[in-house]
Length: 269
Ligand SMILES: [Zn+2]
Ligand SMILES: [Zn+2]
Image 1 (cartoon, rainbow, N blue to C red):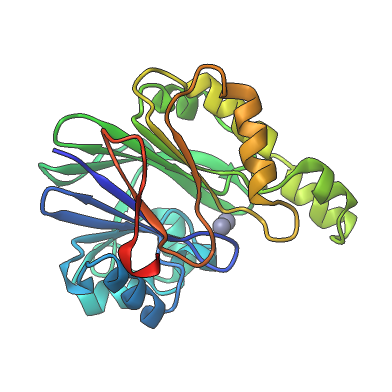
Image 2: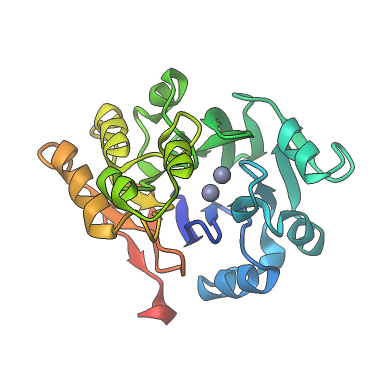
């Protein structure tokens, strides 16, 4: 059994990732308009009404924007932790199922999700490790200032890792942002730099790892070639799988667990 991981788009203007395993379909984050969410799902041949569940990692609007409306319209179960639900004004139980950090969420026999708390601003954010029916794992890790011991542990042995490479340190420091914002982005509760991401990947690297997607790149403080070259500098010698970049306007490709090379989304090529 495989699992398909498709970034419907990623960046500061919106994030959403589609996971399909067996007959189960889950969305991690719902940060685009409802119309955009639906048209992006159609591009990869998925009926919005077939989505079983939506998990929101944290309350920032680029991840949560239309999650509740989508869950109602598509009759998909909405999942968030208590702080996110509270900040969004979602009623636990009636509107949204709440989870605790490291509590596995069983969606079906084909797919379960493990939320792992990560440090990020005023948010109770989580990284997500998705496990398919064969026990193979894919990680989605965005919006964190640094990794944690717990996250590093769970990344080891994953077959796929999607992880943010938000900024290039030199570009951020030389760029137009005010000093306070630069400090916030590069601080413990901000985002990962290319070099932090490269080091996390170096620690997580095993023979199982077949595909990496770098996501949530800042349009002002980063560039795809900078992110990719920084990661290759760290792991290029030992890593033989694929590295792709997920951009703001997607979806461009899908990764299948057990398959190194991503598959292009037909209608966009
Ligand atoms: Zn955020
Ligand atoms: Zn974000």
